Amino acid sequence: MTLTNTQYDEIMRSYQSRQLKRQRLILDRREEINRLTPRMAELDAETARVSVRRARRLLDGEDIPPEDIADELAAITSQKKELLISLRKPADYFDPPYDCADCKDTGYIGNHRCHCLKQASLDLIYAQSNLSSALEEAGFARFCLDYYADDRFAQGTAISSRMAAQNAYTKCRRFVQNFDDDFQNILLFGDTGVGKTFLTHCIAKDLLATGHSVIYFSAQQFFDRLAADTFGKHGTTETDCRNLFDCDLLILDDLGTEMTNSFTASRLFVCLNERILHRKSTVISSNLDLQDIASIYSERIFSRITSHFLLLHLFGKDIRVQKNILGGFSPNA
Image (cartoon, rainbow, N blue to C red; front, side, top):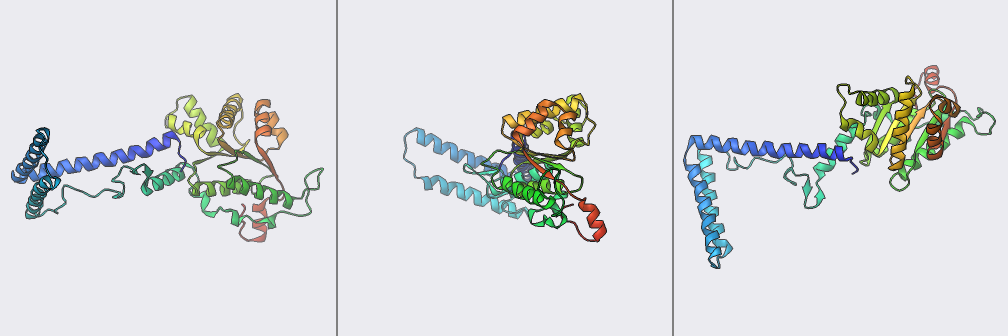
């Protein structure tokens, strides 16, 4: 399970909150019982006296069998339970259940993460990915090559639309399969409506399912988030922006649709450069061709992308248009 430090801290704060809530509940219940009868406080005092008496005898060098103290404490515990029952309370009234009995709401069993912590990590990763609803229809098994023509070729090449789509599909699946062992980035670029976004969703779905942290933004959302952080706008925290740099995979969809200026270019460079330096993968989709990326952004950004990204070109007819014409379902759209 891969979490950023900020994500881990957020989850562990929830465990601390559970523990504090349980402690508060126990204190409230004790105060309640003490108001009903003084006998419970007397039994608590007797428990303390037994423990102190044993400690003194041990300090005096006496050899006290463990069962002696255990029998005394068990007798007092039995009296407490009988008293609670007489007050119409459960015998375990001072021992309310944990949300997770296995780890007692610590998140760990020994040195190993409890199943509840693993699930909480997955839930947080999904929630912060911005992809919850989009992934319902995604999946590599749903990628269909029928929408790509064998007789439409990339300019000046013998590569058909279908061949390019097959190559992109294969490379994206391999990207997921080798994600933990082989640092890569991907740029999916080309015509509008040819499955670029769908492939990013396929990648995200598989990596999220294996517990990797994935954050998805449209280009406009991404730059709005960075602008809010830079200019101190309400609603954006340092944690939000730190996750953009620390997550296992950052997906930027539709690069080039945002309002481009010197700010967006500089922030994009900082983000890409830092993620490359820390070997954190990025997937970008764009309707721009490579020449447009070079002219709209900067040579530095173009250099980073062409040097460190796997370039996957998709082209052909808009799948959404084909879907409307055929009146059928388009899995790639």
